[in-house]
Length: 242
Image 1 (cartoon, rainbow, N blue to C red):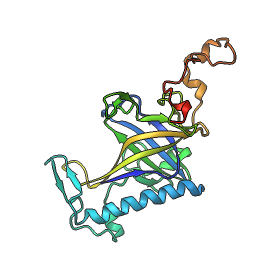
Image 2: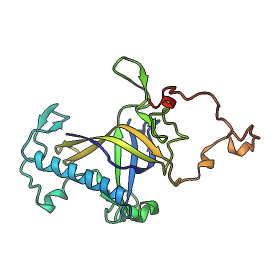
Image 3: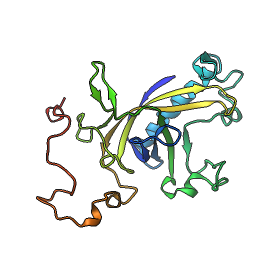
């Protein structure tokens, strides 16, 4: 297993970190533009970590068998230098221009063909079973592991308003190899441990359409947006650079 913090920000989309899906998981997808050198550096960083786990996973007990609840060699008999073997593994980092969907109504199409905003990009879905907005620190105090750091310091907890599709983020990822099971093949999972927003990006959706107050055409005071507050940040230490 490996703890991975990306060197450079990626674009967040398909954000489901504030409410779990039907499978009980919280998820977010990261996009990496092939024309952006910094984002491609992150892709290389992820690829190197995955390659290392595949190599080690052919001989070392670094995998976890959830059915037997024991450590195992996740890829016994595999050859990390064999492209055909690599293709048998479910890996979290994918090329949207070449990865072909295998199930559903879009089976046979590439991800980029189905989702145009994925064209020219690599993508990676991160998931967790934990509600990262409601955690506790070492002293038992409530804390969110989804933090707005767009001002260069640890700021308030992220919300659905501040963490939107298109925002720039950096995650803390736990890569974990797993063996083949009864209903799945072997692969490497990408688990989200924490995420910070590093800045605003080009929204991939109409943000006004997400605000249920927009349709009321409410007047604003002092240029404030309807529903916002002038109260201090939830993190009073942020302004102190702590």
